[in-house]
Length: 117
Image (cartoon, rainbow, N blue to C red):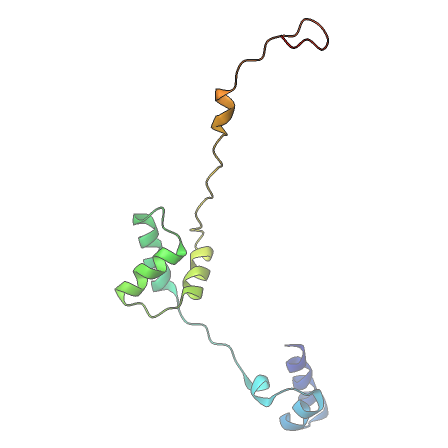
């Protein structure tokens, strides 16, 4: 990203070609010309939200499988990214209390130092 800005500055300020600016900066010309395109994910986000409302305990992997069965051509990484952006992450379960502690014998109060029984 920094090299692309520098290349743009060289082209504008010194009026050199893009080819020469990229060569000086060791920047691929394809990288210089690249422009990112985002797909519109609103419909997929809406469907993911609907599935998450119906299947409350399903995580992103399971919802991805349901989407694939419906014919959505998205990979698991995109589904997981949208799942996190929508705030659908499952809360982690709280650890259960150790039940072995309830079965311990009651301790008797000690009357003297080093008293066993």
